[in-house]
Image 1: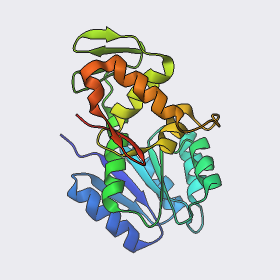
Image 2: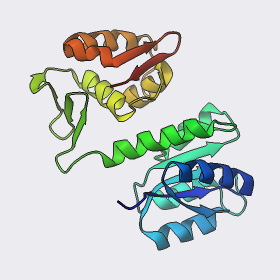
Image 3: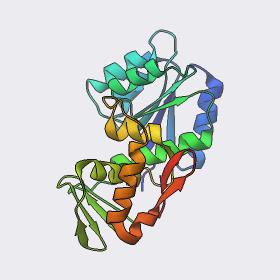
Length: 224
């Protein structure tokens, strides 16, 4: 099977090498760009980039502009890297269609875990929009869930929540992150609404509800 190709864009050669080394160890092919213009050239020449890791602050053309240009032609997954932990920047990123947002400094292992989760989410669906994990089958196109070959009745948000958990298997998810990704930024309520929905979801899943682990003081993790 061919290795998935990832484009790493950062004007710091040391940062590119760090990211490349970890991705290569995890069996990905990596191509590098040191500025936005070079990144766009590589992306449109290659045609087979599976994911882009894109720094925000770069000379000539910043990450936002690169993202805008690519989004006009492609829905390729994009992870943005930034030295600033600014909520407004993060919101702008998601509005531009960024899939993940990671602030520097970061753990390379966490970055690889995010890459794997996004690629799993974007590549594991079949032509029927199916995902499977631990005896749970999710049909995204039909908005249906089967557990051990039996259908279960979920509300719209319960379905979205379960799908998000399965797409991010093995990754610790904070309540705020779940809220932002499942309820989106148009929800201004209490993050504890997550706990209520998880409780209902677990009860409907029966024994499989135990696959949703509670991480005390933080959030949840789906683990088979």
